[in-house]
Length: 246
Image (tube, helix red, strand yellow):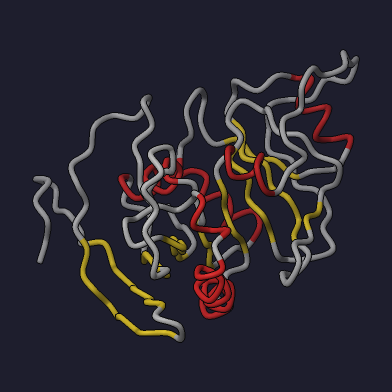
């Protein structure tokens, strides 16, 4: 299936953490600035986040109890009218995120139209809730996310040619283990964070099958101001026997 070019772009500590106390430290500020600047380097039309990241930083948290509704909507993709061709793609398999608008405007970033990614587990009440805000939504899987189908629909229905995946760790690994990421970009802050609850850039969800570690080819390494590093990798391809191709 056709899909967009996909880059996973992350800000990390020296020990691979992508959240934690180090983010708030002044020594991390230069890395945060460089990470934001490099988003423009890739020229992506859409940025994709997992449910936890969306709830913590972008949506209105979680939806809570929904009102009963007499409106019945089929479990089919819904493409709302949009004022922009920039998108925020929200992975929300069960339909639990809260919203107040079908657009998001983060400081320093362009206005983006929300696309909710659902599975057929979602309730009819949640579909009515999304329609109330005229939020676009697409179905990608019956009970679990079908990442390949999702990417195909983003290209087919929204003409998205370049997509950025920006966490969390489980959604990053979901796409990586499926062989759907074309490049990994890591901005490394010159800091270590020993917090044991912070997640790393790639983590397997309990419901996903085991997958062997993924090997990479180094594409570029660049030293940025204030001891910040920018690393670019390309995942090595595997052949049908499961062996990594050189």
